[in-house]
Image (cartoon, rainbow, N blue to C red; front, side):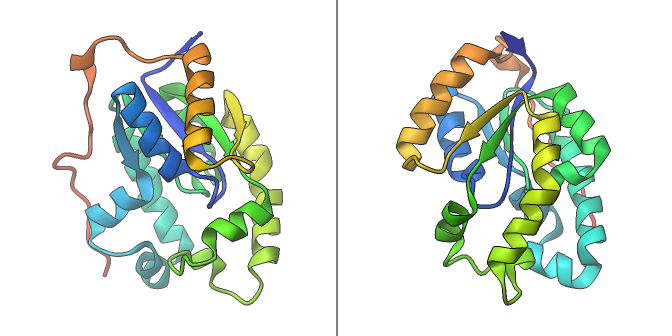
Length: 195
């Protein structure tokens, strides 16, 4: 049984990291943190605006700093952005401070789940299928590198996926036992606004 301060969900957009992650956090009595939402809260700007004003490099710098702050805490389910694994330092930190689950979904499942979502800057182009294929080829080995466990969310409804993943987590991860050990670093965390 692996013990780590946090449960960390990595994987592509549309894999269910946020929707399933919230349910897993509730099931285990843990705090839930969505890194993209945390970045938006800290900056007062949508992710798409950060990409527009600062480019992907600016966003990734903010993502790296936010992950480092949040991972100081414990007893959290943390849903990362799909590209968080691009940074080698992030991958090391995720493994050091979390039990990392690679949430996998095939491209057809991703497209179905993301069909009405207009907030994904990397899917703003003309060919989202090609973008998802390119991202999968680039990132799949990185998800595998930092993950302790891989879970395919594709064929499951959200409640079913939550139940199955919950069972796997119970048999593979031991969260910190002390409920007073919960520290969510986001409270009062400072960040600079997007220009």
